[in-house]
Image (cartoon, rainbow, N blue to C red):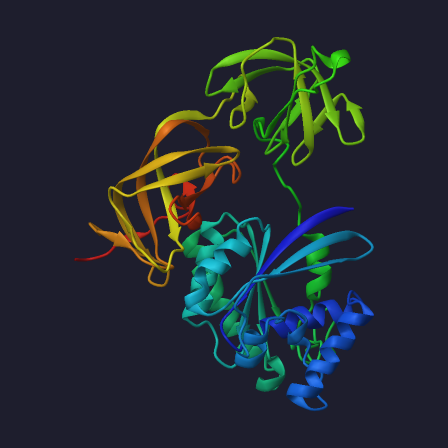
Length: 425
């Protein structure tokens, strides 16, 4: 079975955690001990009411405040597909957590309270999902029971969201009216909304394309580890281990190794289950080549006819995550790009973006916590990288404060997924 990664987002009290709990409960994906713990916590905090939000709101602070703070991952499966579901925070002060949880997702569930419609946080979450390259967005119009299952309320929200998605260039948008509390259109179709003639949420998730286009992209295989067994019988063995980020690798294929620029031919591919003739993303493999080359961790096996750019200067969109300091021109951090680590200097802060108004403010001096902007970086060594819009693995990076070892920013190489209008000064 294939695997689908899902990120959820919603404003505070939109019912996001309840929806996830209902999805897991109705699909019979909760273990008995987890369900018993939720029932016990519900009795202590809510009386006889079983609060399914506690399935994901596991931290004590989350239960006490009634909000999601950390990113909680849940794993479940149906007869046709496996799922990894990230419950990301909805509050604006935890935007960085939402970015982290959504960074590997292929689908974003944006939950909207039918009573409130599309609010600022709804726009924020949709825009961030688009910036992160998530192609499939499902808008869950929740709490329809509190508006009498009124079709006109749903249609108004659907139209407003469709307008926003057209503005930011999202092509695959689906909206679903539901009540997570009562299970309407979550796993089973709702008898209360006969006017809705499409599939419930779980069936839609089973049908979303997975890994679409990865095999069609050029080969990118970052070297994570050089395998050199210390045994006499293996004195001439050298393999290069890593996970294929995109493309297909075949025995006999000629590859380029960047940034050194060497070329060689693949003589063997070792997968965890043995020797194979070919492998594709995201397989973890060990590669052997015909030539004895000096290849180290951080270099990348690439397609000879379509290599990435090799550069020490990049333009990137970054989300600043550090609450102790701001990003400023001249600052130096450690950049982690695929398996390569190097020093990076901020040579310019070109714009700060408003993901609510979709405007860009130029000539700024800094980026503070949860702010998103475009910066210029100069790297101490060449990076073999792609535009994020083309390849999310070789087009992304993080910045690390070497003094504290804290991850202070997540970055996406190239222009944003859509154009921010220039704000009037």
